Image 1: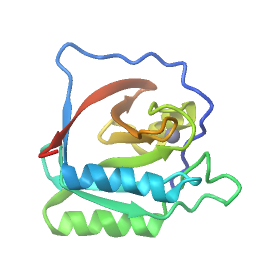
Image 2: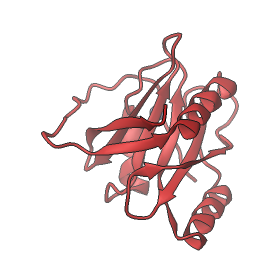
Image 3: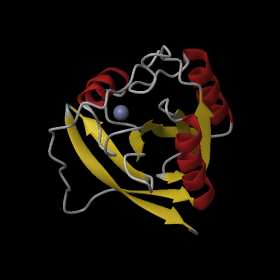
Amino acid sequence: MYPGCRPDGSGVAVSLPPVGETVTLTVDVYRAMLDRALTETPKEACGLFTGPTGALHVDDFHPMANTAPDDEAWKLYVLDGQEMLNVEAAADAGGRAVLGVMHSHTHTTAYPSPTDVADAARFDPFGAWVFIIVSLKHPDPVLRAYRILDGGVTEVRVVVDGG
Ligand SMILES: [Zn+2]
């Protein structure tokens, strides 16, 4: 289980290191993430994304069910544990890696909520994953990426490959 986020603001400063990380998304992955956010709203969308081991190059997105209760799914995402294991097993078997998790914010900016930061401490204590958030706050969706480590949030630059 993988509880998620509440759109109750952030209050945490973004820290951009001088030499930051960059995550590359294929244009198909980028579009699939935006599409998923738009089709799942008013619920939060969520899913894992994968790529070759050892690089931050995302070439596959696995949309997943948001198993949060109906009255909370607009502000919270919960990944299905078995579905998560299946995606991880398929990635392992193909010599690939789960690089992180995407979810949407239906009414707030593309920035980790306090709940997102608290959750990250539990399921990604070493900061191994990239957290991608798609915001639907404005008419045009906004996609941004972060590392979350020890309660700190660091933005990761996003490049769409072939977009
Ligand atoms: Zn969130």
